[in-house]
Structure formats: C-alpha cells, structure tokens
Length: 126
Length: 236
Image (cartoon, rainbow over all chains, first blue to last red; front, top):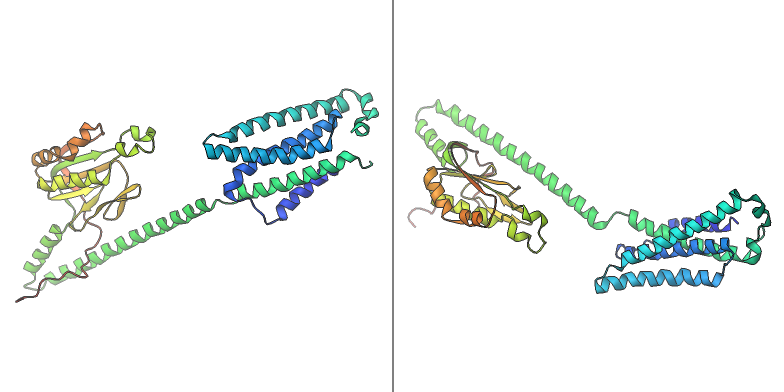
C-alpha cells in the first residue's frame, strides 16, 4: 500500500541528487509533460479506487500523454498558437476530476461506511 | 500487506513522476542566467555612477584648491589683471553658475507611448535629436548659457542616444526634459518656435515654453581635457 509513496519519495530524491536540470528553453514543454504525468498517476490511483485498474493503460498513458503534450506545445510554438494553455487547461481539469473521484472513494470507504471497508475488494479485482 | 500487481507499476510511475518533477523544479528555482547578467550589469552601472560622483567631487575640490591658490596670490602685486582674466575665462567656459532672463522648455513623452505597440513607440517619445535641434535653435537665437535637466551644455558637450536613455555630458537623463537657456527671452522664443519645438507641438507632444526672469543654470561639472589640441606654434 505504501510502496507508491515510497516510490514518489525515492523519485524526489533521485531528481534532487541527479545533476541533470532541464534546460531553460525546454522548461515549458517539460512542465506540460509533468502535468500529463501527474494526470496519469492520479488516473492510475483513481482506476485502483474504482477497481478498473490496468497497468498497460497506465504505463502507455503516462509515457504517451507526456510526450504528445510536450510535442503539442512545441508544435503550438512553431505555428504561433498557444497550445500551452490548452494542455494546462485539459490536464488541470482532469487532475481535479481525478482528485475529486479519489476523495469521494476515500470518503465512502473510510468515513461514511465502515462495513464496506472490511470487504476490501479493491486488491482482488485489480 | 502483500504485494499486488498494481503496486509495482504505480510505484514506477510515481518514481518517474517524482524524478521529473524535481529536476524540472530545479530548473525553475535556478536563477535565470539573463536575470543574473542583468543584476551584474546593474551593479556595474551603480558602481560606475558612484565613481563618477566621486570624480566630480574630486574635480570640485581641486578647483576650490586652485581657487584658493589664485586668491592667495592676488595679494601679490601685478597679478590682479590676470586674476580678472581668469575669472572671465572660467565664466565663458561655463565653469561658473549663471542666472538671468531666458526661457525654459519642457519636453515630455506622449501618453500614448505607454500603450502603443512596440513598433510604434518611437513616434510618441522624445528623441535625442529633438533636444539637439532645440539646443541648436537656442544657440541660433543667441542663448548665452544652456542646460538640459541641470546639465550645462558647453563646447564639448554631447547630446546622444544611449539605448533607452538620452545622455548629456555622458550623464543619463530621464523625462521630462527641461531645457533652460539664458538670453533675450523674445529672441529665444522666436528662434525656438521656428524650429523643432513647433513640430513637436503640432505632433501633440505635451511641450511647454515659459519666459522667465530668473533662470538659473548650474556650472559644468566635468572637466576639459586637451590631449591633442594645442595652440599653433608662432611663426609657422
């Protein structure tokens, strides 16, 4: 259960210790990519909560969404349309939706209905 | 709790996300090289300004010293005419503050300059040529002493454009530009109105011209240096 959080912490540490920093020119694309990955991660958590989890979907979403969004922003720069805001808007909305779903699931699981908690079906279905 | 399948992939995703996030964060927290460069440039300008102020005060103190020697020597006989001549020359060279009747012109950028497109801003701001032309007109009108924002215009003065600034005597000016001139006020006005001033006025620049009897013009704070020019040798 705590493994993902451990992974997150470890990721922070790796990012911190690595000397690699994103060049300032690529920072906007990278920011969008990171937004996409955050969306994917939260989407994964939501899927787990909703018991519809699929590792392949999560992984492909993670990599393809981040690459495509970064590329879209780059494309926007080329043709002079600010696609940056589109990406930020879309991922922002999705992140909020995912967080809302996670919140609802958590509330219904641990607060409003204690009986449901004991069943704990989440893990078996996957 | 036993290891489930979903643990692993989410962990990997979280790990990647964390690493990307922090490496990107570092870029944002990292100081922008351009900003750092600007900061050093600002420092350079500040120290240079300070240096200029120090040197100007040094010139002033040296001049005072010279003055003291000169007045001390007036006690000696025969030097009085020389002393008078020196004072007259200093006055002519603009090394003394002067006052008298004259005109005062103020030039301001147009309000539109603040909102105009970058390509059109040039139409709405005062350029160094405007000041240069007006100073020229004032000279043609018989001005005996001229200053721009308190900078005395003397024979070696420059009126130049340096980036976004206009410099006079190599000192940066900021708008509004106040050009003061001592001379016959009517003649000065006539001369100025025949030239650039009227053009600016007609182009809707907020310019003003005022005739006054108590124009004060400070002394030239720089120094004259002649490294190459010398009086011609006699008999050549």
